[in-house]
Image 1 (cartoon, rainbow, N blue to C red):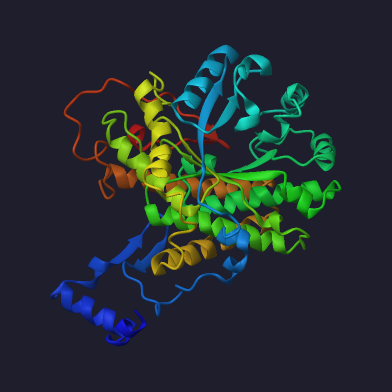
Image 2 (image 1 turned 30 degrees about the horizontal axis):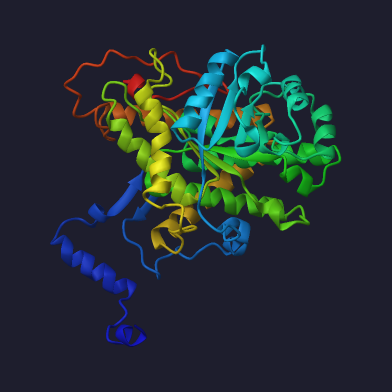
Length: 444
C-alpha cells in the first residue's frame, strides 16, 4: 500500500480549486460555497487538509473529549414517559421496554406520584432510569423508595435555570454526601425554541457553569460538582452541524472544567442525551418524519452521545402519539445500533476536514456567546437571560420566514403537499423560559 501511494502525486489545495473551477464550466463558484444566514456560517462545500481551520482541536487529546476511554460507540435507547397518572404511565413504560427501549425517562407532571405504582414490574436495577423532577420534595420522596439494588441506576433532571426556586443549600448538602446526576443543562429547551447550534452550546455551558459554581460555593469540590450534572441537547436537520455541535460541547466543557483544576480525569466526562423533537416534523405528511427522525438520530449516534431519545413525532398533537409513531421512535435508534452497526466505531467522523472545520467554527462562535453571557453576570442574571432569549427569538422568526418564503424547503410542509388530507393538528405549544416552542408546520 505504501508503494501504491508513491505512484501518485499528492494533490494540493490549489489543485483542488483548479479542478473544481474547471468542472464548473463557467458557472459561478457560489454553487460550491455555503452561506447559512441562520447559523451565520460561510464556508466552501469542499475542504482539504491545507484549508484553514481543518485541524482537530488540541483539546481532543483529552480521552474524555475524544471518547477514546470507551470500548464502543453504543448508546442507550431512551423512551420518555409523561407522568400524569402513575398507572397509565407504568403501562406506557412497560410497552416501551417491550418494544426495545433500553432506558426510561419519566417526566413528572403531577404532584401525586406513587413511585411503587409508577415502576411496578420494572426491574430498575437492570436499566438506567432518569426522572425529570420539579422540586426537592419529589427527589427526596423518590430517594426514600429506592432500594440499594436500583439506587445507582436512577438519575434525575432538575432544570435550575427554568425553575430557580430550589432550596440549593439543602440539595448541595445531600449531593456532598453522595453524588448523583441531579441537575441538567437543558439545551433541548432552547433548541426547540429556535436556537442555533452555537446559541444552544452557549446556553448549556452557562447553565452547567452556574450549577458547578453554586455547588462549589456550598462546599463541593469541582470533581464532586461535575458528577452532579448532565446535558440534554436537541437535534436539528442539518446533519454535519449537529455532529459538530456535540463535539464542540465536549471540547468547551473540558476547557471550562480544566480551569478549576480537577483531580480526576472522569470529571471531564459529559453525559449527553440527544432528544429528537418536533420543530421540523409534519402532521399533514406524517411519513416524511421517518426520514427526518432517522437522519437526526444518526447525527447523534455519530457524535457519540450517551443516550438517544426519539420522541414520537405526533406526541405534541391533539390526537397524541399513535402506536405507529411510538414504535418508529423506539425502532430508529434500535435499527441504527443493531442492524446498521453505528455502535461499533468511536467518533467515526474524526479527521473529516469538513467536520473538523465546522466543529472549530461552531465552537468559536459558541465560546464568544458564552463569554458574553458570563460578562453579563451568567445565565442566572436577568439581563443575560433576556439578551439570549432576544437573539434566539430573532433566529426563530428568521426560520419561520425562510420556510414561509420557501427559501428553506420542507417536503410536506411548504413544498409537495400530501394529497391525502390529514386531520390531526398541533396542540398549543409549550414554552421554555417564556419562549414558545417552534413548530414550523404550525407557524405557516
